[in-house]
Image (cartoon, rainbow, N blue to C red):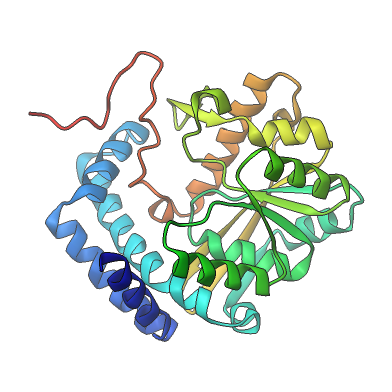
Length: 293
């Protein structure tokens, strides 16, 4: 029953014009902030860790801004899934670093596109896959109807979806070696075997080694991208990866990738996923998110 209600709600959001949906999302975000529930608590902890130089009032303003963006992302994404590729193309208000992207696509080497949870990452994948062949890892949600909806949206744009397992990783490598584009989300906490500790915003964070392993095995290029929310749509930002990302020393490469992600975060800090428990795995066993009793 709960899943059906959620799906019905998301379908309803998908019917709302973008501006109306964002207004509804901001209202939801304000309510989340006022109630001070889970996302607010986690965001406050993360912001305190990552921005110690800010005053308490500055961090609180950023937390409130994040909740407004969080609400907008929640409501606008079903609209993105529901509309055509042409609609999405018309909602891209600009592309920063377009020359970088075009040069990467023209290069015979493949391109690894690193897309953090910044702005609306669904928009990045759907837009890029209309420009060039793109293969991405995909882990289906537990709701079959939602799975079909998301897959339909991504595949109608031309994306190839592969599972988040060894077969999927092999498919990414093959795509890169064919000179195509593969996309990954780099800022989720991996399993212990799938990552190493590296600083992110000055805090130790278990970080996936998948991206740097792909670079070493496929000898590909690397670009970072985010779709930043603006009035009327989104602005895409492409940034080049730093040289250290290509290092054959894994610790160096992974740390460099985190630093590059920080550069994207700085474009619009309120649009980053601060409500995610990014630092839940700590080398000293510290529990940043434990509730006080």
